[in-house]
Image (cartoon, rainbow, N blue to C red):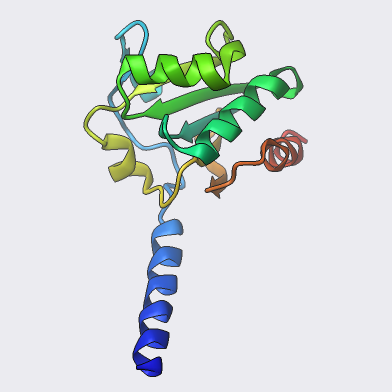
Length: 165
């Protein structure tokens, strides 16, 4: 029984590592929607300079709530960064998330809330946990850093500071 348990855990560990490594090195082609305007949102709508941060989250996820609150509180420290909060949740749940945990994000021009009702983001970006944060260079569209399951905004701040140099 011990051998079976060990093999099963080893398989799980290898599988998770393999999926984690599949984060796209380039921003893939996608077609989503801005949650509040319902306008189409595609790669052509992304900025051409600075850093692009996709934060895939779920409104009911405690770690996501903590990260959202942290980003809201530390927004003034993020320079040349555009955040895209991507969720499958409907408008009323996202509004609840914002109102309870991150009120400062809604009017913030450096933040957009993106709706993914069909799970396209999961298929293309392969997150294994929430929140799952992808940091891309806006100019080259290349992946610079992927943080999976991190809920401490300080970890994100350090990563962005290191990448902005």
